[in-house]
Image (tube, rainbow, N blue to C red; front, top):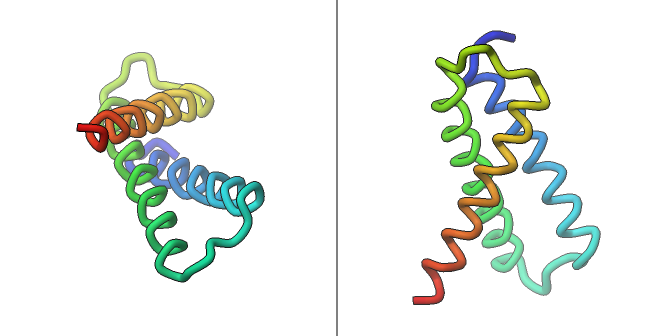
Amino acid sequence: MNNPWLRALLISAVGFALITMLIFGILGQPASAAGMGEALGRVGAACLFAGLITAWLGRKASPAWSWWGWIGRWCAALVLLWVLSVFGRGR
């Protein structure tokens, strides 16, 4: 799979599934459907944008990144987006 956009989309989908299982496994089901929708929307948007950032950075990377390189950079982009959202919400 040499297409960076497909690779980033696959990593984002797997990351979204793992984060969703982790959140609902630790915290349990939300009290309302609206709460669950908001949680899934926030996690889904963050995963998607992290994938877009990673694909944009990795499309011309030389040398080409390994799968672990893609996953590590996707995780770094995701953490950066979450940190920015926390600081944006606090002001």
